[in-house]
Image (cartoon, rainbow, N blue to C red; front, side, top):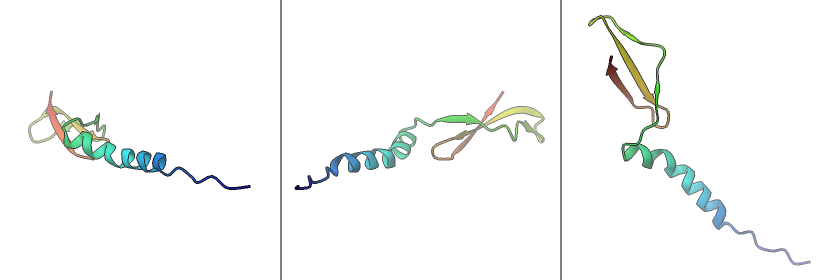
Length: 65
């Protein structure tokens, strides 16, 4: 019984897509922002702030509210 060769192209496509998913979106400016619940109050200024972290690449941004 001859063995059929395994089609490796579908595995290569899947792996390339997974590797590029996070970096391409974030590099293009499409971050996935989530709020950081740890720090919400700025002591020096005495105002409420929101710190958001990108769940893909880990960059942070601060929003004044």
